[in-house]
Each structure stands twice: as C-alpha cells, then as structure tokens.
Image (cartoon, rainbow, N blue to C red):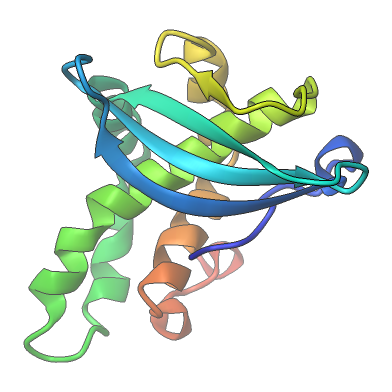
Length: 159
C-alpha cells in the first residue's frame, strides 16, 4: 500500500495518509470509481476512512489532457521484456489513484472532521482539474514509482 502525502503544505503535513484500496466501481453509481484512504491526523487517537470518488470520464479527460500515455512510453520501454503489457495494464488504476490523492489533498486543505466520510464525484470538479494539471509531475512520478520504473525516466528538467 502506498503511503505518502504528495504535497508539502503545512496543513497537509499534520495528516498521515495511506491508500487502503481502489479504484473500485461505486455501487449504484455508473461511471464512478472510488479510492479509499486511511487518514490520521497527528492529534487524533484513531484514523478515519475517506472514500474519494471520481467520474471515469473526468479521469479519462484529465489523462488525455496530460498526454499520460505519451509521457510514459519511454519509461515503459524499460519494463522487463515480456512484461510491458502487464505494466501498461496497471497504468489506468495508478493514474486514478494519483488523481484521487490530488482530490483528497484538496479536501484535507480545508480540514476534515474525525469521522469516516465520502468525497463525492460531483464535488471539486474544476478544482481537481486544476490541481492535477499543476501537479502533473507528481502524477507521473507516482505512476512510475508504483511500477518501479523511475530509473529509466528522464527528469522534467532534462527535457
């Protein structure tokens, strides 16, 4: 399970966040997937679960806008021979997780009560589009780290 706070702002540093599972389809919500995160604030005795929902059409629109597949092509060439298709098959889920992290961070910036909660797909839509666009390198790094392909990927500054 991934454990990271992909942003260094002071209000986020008081949280410890771990991806619990996802993306999974949301029951009775066609076209919506959710990632569930365990969130613990340093001052809390126990953590909470936050279900972060994102519409699949929004995920695809963001993915196409960031040209994720084009940007990953070089790194995927470094995948072990015969396993490239397995790596490529994981990219959509990893991208959805990275987008969900971004959406969760948007919610955490405003603070959350110590109770299990749901961030619905129809919340923070334009904010998420902007946040992911601003954090495109985080998104790419997240995917590459999860695939263990960071060594063959040129840094953004080398392009």
